[in-house]
Length: 72
Image (cartoon, rainbow, N blue to C red):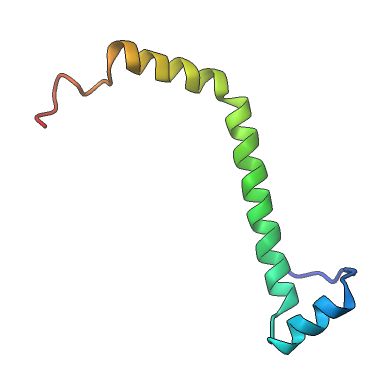
């Protein structure tokens, strides 16, 4: 479901976008999706940094679980 909103943008920038047939709403929506994805990734990494560090140290010290069974 889509909803309407107001956005302020520099007039010259808007004119240039219209010249190149840029669909502002689609571009803005995609940019917001990408920004949310980046923020969520950063939050996940922050929340899990201790676990990731512990896992990496364990792999350095003990190897990975399949070291004994892989043939390459």
